[in-house]
Image (cartoon, rainbow, N blue to C red):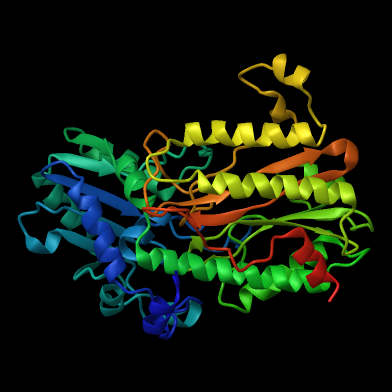
Length: 448
């Protein structure tokens, strides 16, 4: 199964405006919008806003990151943009609309090229492109006709909402100015349709995984006793950027020795000592799509007998867990089954015994002492992508598979992670199948 060849052959064009990535065919976004509007109630309008550019201090800002939902539905990767979908609008021009910041020569000089109306159409497939200065007038017209309004609230179960977003402010104003409408949530629709990937999306995710693999290969040639964790991080980001990625899909974890037992260790500031194992959880993004990899390597290029035993136990759980990701399975049941696989391995490693299992709290089984996190999560435009955990797995969904064993008393943490696509029949397709993972292969590559 080659996910990349057909897409790459038709997509190697110049990058979109100032973006590193190549232009994505607008047909993807046309399909995505069609799926969304099909789920709307009659006479409904939906709004999607770009993210803010967030300040740091003085005149400094964070690099812009587009809101994933407006990107998913339009391909627009630019600040100060609004997407409006109103399939039942009286005026055909109002059924799909993009509102963009009007560009000019001054903006082009100081900030770089922005989307023109023609470029916005080529990106999104949306014909009705307006400047933001026209938004208020059009808004009054369409809101006078619509009965239901779909607002784009953040419904992710792991969300952190301390910061008010551009979308939050827009929703608050909309409800204040138009209180008589019926307001509905766009999130359940998006969680359902975003979780099942189109072919074009899988191709983009394969590129992200391939770039990640190049970063890992570079690490295998670099790691040796006394290197620093941050030096490894630097090698990885070098490889990512030179391959058209904007960088890490999430904050990387480079944890050697006992640091590997801290699940979200991100300081990456310790020296890697001979005899230790380095747990590296890092991955590239490409065109806003994420990959997610974890590999563990011995600092000295050779695992000890005990380290390899733990490593191979985790690998067996990962391989067996992958086979369980089939259509019709509920994720809650999947995780229970993976727990049984891990329990068996921990018994063999003599980390737990049958008495521990007999006395365990069913809400926190004995294996949780050494494997305390989940095994899989949705992956896509977000690293912890949206998806409905209350509905069965479907073909086309992408999941991580990442079991681990953490033994602080042995200064050893092992986690292994690949990204897989659920198939209609048979085992999932591993997007990271070409990235080395077998312990013996890792040793061979590090000592070549």
